[in-house]
Amino acid sequence: MGTNIPLLSCEALCKGYRADRPPVLQSISLELNAGDYIAISGDSGVGKSTLLNLLAGLDQPDTGRILLDGCDLATLDDDQMTLLRRQHYGFVFQAFHVLPYLTVLQNVELPLQLLGMASSDRLQRAQQMLAATGLGDMGTRYPRELSGGEIQRVAIARALVHRPRLLLADEPTGNLDPRTAQSVLQLLRQQLTAAGGAGILITHSPAVAASADRRYLLDGRSLRPME
Picture 1 (tube, rainbow, N blue to C red):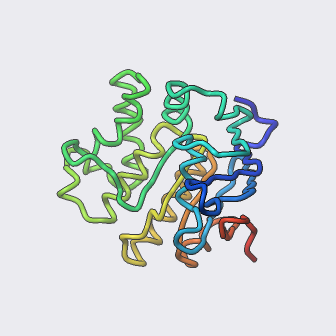
Picture 2 (picture 1 turned 45 degrees about the vertical axis):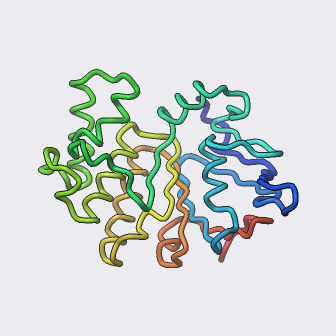
Picture 3 (picture 1 turned 30 degrees about the horizontal axis):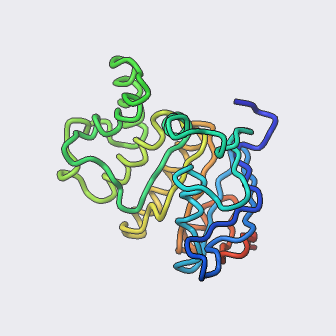
């Protein structure tokens, strides 16, 4: 993938679900370069989750296009899009989505396993990421044995272990107390920077949004920078 073009480019995205209602998103454009870390805020129902689904290729815009390193997502079939997500996207969600029947280490290894990385290499990479997130001695534990903050660190380690180009984080601190939330945000930013990727953080919290380099307000009809 190239380096002289924006990492992510969204051009005039529109998306609706019912013909008798206005579109959820109208003419939304955004450009993101490697190293950028932005926050998007907005009221409930303005299309934040819809936008993330479009950016991840989980849904298709009605009009407009999305390019990742110049690759138009609309030109990819389902298998190609799945591979692109595995290779170049990382996801962190409010609900964590760690697998309860896998150990911490196995959860973090999973993205590398799906990419076909050799067992010894993915074990080393996963252990390094656990150490970086302060979980180096918890690899054999199961999620039920961890606190909420520790589970969220597992989710961050799993999202970043394959060094994604683009991280999408949807209310990643919504279930955490303020002190733990700040620790998780610092960790997320630190690890994303180390991986050389870019990140989009969806949040209702002004304090969480303030952790980003740039902040945007989404109202469905526009995505505009905030002071």
